[in-house]
Structures are given as structure tokens and as C-alpha cells.
Image (tube, rainbow, N blue to C red; front, side, top):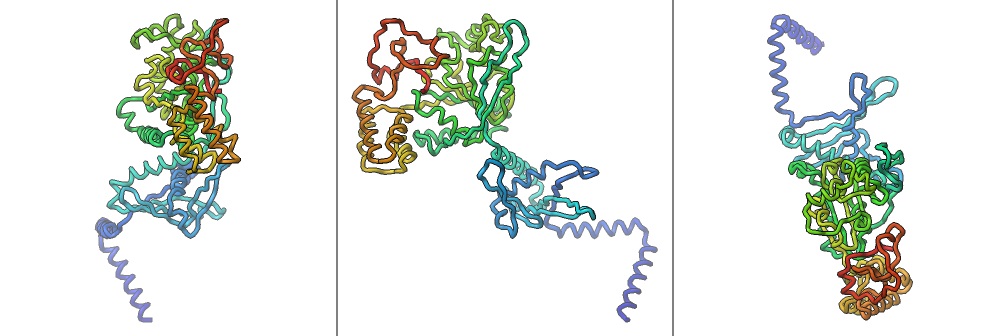
Length: 503
């Protein structure tokens, strides 16, 4: 009874105090008390709702990105409850945070926490979902904005890698009609699922060169702000050159799998003119690799005469209709230069352009300059160190008593491509010793013949050797009746300027 009397007395005092003290003074006292409470609060909280707006009907894109990002944190699997899921046609397992659970993150030395909050919205059973970011107030000014940018970048990369890779090709004629300016109505690109298993680990080439390419790719992917600061289009050009069967196409597949980029295999013989080439370029997506294989056969290259770029461009424009190659009905050197580093090359970002050729010397120097083809990578014949990678891939061995003889055969000018070495190991994979002995024999045979004794004969610079080629290349090489066919030495093969395409 006494306690109840004291309570009523206290309430009476409060009522009298509120009636006597001016409201303005009460508001000042309240703010003063809140400011003191704020000084004792060490953390700030930021809510990321799943939906926002007056009616709560607009979806918040940041919510999905935060959800994806949390799945990449190792602490997400250490919570009491976590959701596991996978996307269609993927073996990767992803983690999402269960309601009421929290996970810690560290960024730039600051500790942050994500809390998944789920609340009932009304009696009908609707719920509101939010992620709450907890951050120390001393880190807010320095860390908050960079951290949110980091969260979005990681989430976008994860979402990108969830998508199935595609291989595109321009299989139909694409360009403008000869008699009219109207464009063909056929679609520019068609695609299929890209399932090539090549990786940098399985490529048969020197480890130093593989690491150099991977480092260059990593720097390119992270270089958005750098390229923008330089005022350059965010693209990168690679020239792969070397004999057929040395792994140029496998390298492209490994790059696509490493970066998770789609591939656009551009067939120039299916492009009517420069206008069609530009239209195809605008239809390519960001984060993609544009490939032109055997460009020395696909592009009508002029003979080298020491002219400079301006003269070459002017020469490429002769006979064109507004620089479209319309009258000639083909893609010109000028059109290709505009494709790789002209104004049209800035259509889209984060694109890689790859040219392949069996002979770099046949290409016009204007195509090879930095800014167009930034890295020139030579793919040589198989070496002993590359063979050891193939032996591990095909036979599952890293050492063998016959390796010494294999190394001696390579040192004795044994000349085989990685494709030929791999095929030799494949057909004899039942017996490791038999496979290695067959390879030693093939290497010794190629050495005795002064060159590659396994692959079909290829043309020299004057075109005196017979070889098989696809129909689209037959018009470029004609052997006159009675032309002598002589054995092809290794030295002459390495110096020749015309090579046929693989296969």
C-alpha cells in the first residue's frame, strides 16, 4: 500500500512539473538527454529493406546484392541456421542467411555485421524482410561507402558467374544489300551453350607464360577506373600466333572459363561489308571475348609496301561506299582498324579481342600495334615441360623412367605440336610405357626428317606444297600443274609465311 501511495505521489509531481515548465524548455531537456545517450552508443545501424515505397511494392535491388554477397562470407556457414541452394545447370553450392542470424565481415580493418531481420507486416501473414548493417560509428565516414561499393561489385561478379556461358557465331550473311541501303533481316548472332573443359591448369605450355597471361587478365578485369582515367576504351587485344595445333584455340577457351566471359566467334567471310561488321560489334555483350581465327585468311590483306596508317586507311577506303566496304562487298583493313580501336570499339566495355594466325608476318603491321593487339603471344612446338603437363593430363603420371629418353628426343630437335603429342598419348593410354615409347619414336622420326614428320605437309612461301584446306580458302592457293613437291624441312617450315588452318 505504501509503495502504491509513493507511485501516485511521483506521478502527481510529474504532472505538476509538466504544467509549470514551458514546453520549449521540456524539448531542450529531451534533446540534451538524447545527445548524451547518443554519445554512449558505439554503433550505427543501416537497414536494407527488400521492398520500399509508399505501398512497399517496389523491389530493392540492393537487397538481392547483399543477399548474394553474404553467401560469399565464410562465416555464413558457421551460423546456427543457413540455407543451401544451387542454380540450374550448375554444381556450385551457394549459402544464404536464415532469418534472425548474423554474420561478421572485415573490410579495410573495420569489423561489420549483417543481420537478417524478418517481421510480420499485418494479420494476413505478410512479412517484411531486411538486412541490417551494423558498423562502429568511428568507421562510418571512412568505410561505409567503399564497403557498399565492394558489396555490389562482389555480388555482380557472383551473379555473372552463375550464368551459363554462351558461344556465339555469325553463321548467316550479314550486311547491306548491294542494290539498296536496307539491311538484311537475318539475326546477327546465334548461340549455343559453351561447355569447353579447358583451364589454365590443363594447358600444355610454359608455366611462366601462363602466369603472365593470367596476371594480365586479372589486371584488365580490375582496371575499369584506370582505363577511364586514361580516356581509353575498356578493352584488351591479344594476338596468338604459331603453328597449327599448338593450343591457340584451347587458350581462348581457358580464358573464357577463367573470366567467365561469353565467346563471339566472328567469321569475317560471312560479313558483307564494314557496316555489317560494326553492327555485329554493337550486338556483342560486355564481359565477352571476340575471336577472329586465322585472320590472315579471313581478311583481304594488302601487300606490305611500307605505307603508314593514314595511307593504309585511305587505300582501304578506295571504292568503299561511305567507308562501308559496300561496293567491294568485303571487310577492308580500314574497317577492321575501326573495329578494334576506332570510335566503334567503345561500344560496350570489358571486352577482349583475340586474333589468331599461323604466321604473324603475313598480317598488316597496322593491325599489330599496341592499342590494337596489346599482347603478342607465340605458341611454339611442344617442349619437354609442356609434355609433362600432357603426360599428367592423359596418363595421370608426373614421373616415369622413360622421361629421360623423352627429354633427349626433344633436345635432339624432335618437333611435334601439343595436339600431336596428346593424340599419341591418347591412342596408347592403356599402357603408359607403350604411350611413351610411341612418343619417343615419333619424336625421333620427326628429328630424322629435319622437321615435323607427323603432320601433313604445309605450303611454303611460294606455295609449292600440297595440303588440304576448307573450301573458303581454296581460292587463295592454287598449285599449277607439274609443280614439284619437295620434302619440307624444319627450318623452312619455321620461316614460311602461309599456313593452313588446324584440321
